[in-house]
Length: 195
Length: 186
Image 1 (cartoon, each protein chain N blue to C red):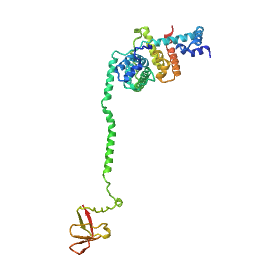
Image 2 (cartoon, helix red, strand yellow):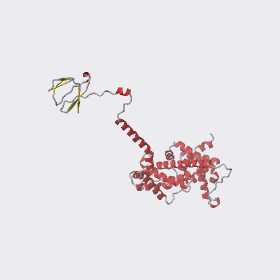
Image 3 (cartoon, each protein chain N blue to C red):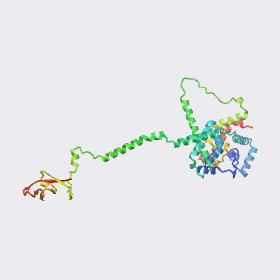
Image 4 (tube, rainbow over the protein chains, first blue to last red):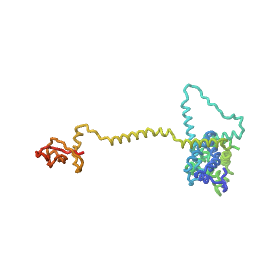
């Protein structure tokens, strides 16, 4: 993410302020600026592109409806990522409940339930893509508390201070969780990371 | 604590470029001497590099259109009167109206006297004082004890000479008529 300041381009805080004064074009600019990075963040969190877009749309909807709730004391990116992160976690919890319910509704007729693997065939993917799929799979398998910090730090490249504000946890906790999350990924992906 | 454990504890800070000066130099010196730590740091650095360079996910081409449609639906739903909200509050409204009507009715109707106990509580009807005006009056004959008549007959246009407490004397007839009268004025 390019964080250089360009003085000709309005900052996020200026845009949201204009939007709070009913400038709808400012909202369009906010959407344009954040849609891809939020989608990337949520996709790495949920592992599903369609769900990720749905969550990001809901995020912008919340920004639109609650624009007056933003105050300049925090960065706009902190605010919007907090909304997106909370919505992503809600979706994750909903998925877990759905999964539990579908298991509990299984019949007891001694049939084998073979789940069809609709994933791509290994031999049709190039090595780089395979490596990426494997990495994403292991990120998805991380506990939520490690996944969110690793994605924000190592994928989205937020500073520890910003992550601390987004997740509302102490900065020391963020650093500790990043360390432990990386350690888990390193253990699972050792064979991919060796030179 | 072994030097390896000590340096592993600072590994994250080293990878995140938080270390400066001597501390950073010390770790680099240790890495040069310890292949395990060097391999460990190398793996974590590769992991961070791989995470940073994951192909970023982007939105679909019709993202803006879908978002606009969603916003339009949301705003239309907000401004439209929500019938489900009305249905939710309707029973409360009905109860309040009924209670209000009941209270109003209770205040308007006098409570009927039904039992003897209630009768005893009721104050006797008091005679009103005759109004000293030119309003026409009538008097009726009634046999009442003098003491029970608090007021005296006031007047008649016909031949009343004077009035005593309990009787009237007609002008053209000096016969003293003992009559017990009470006045009713209209």
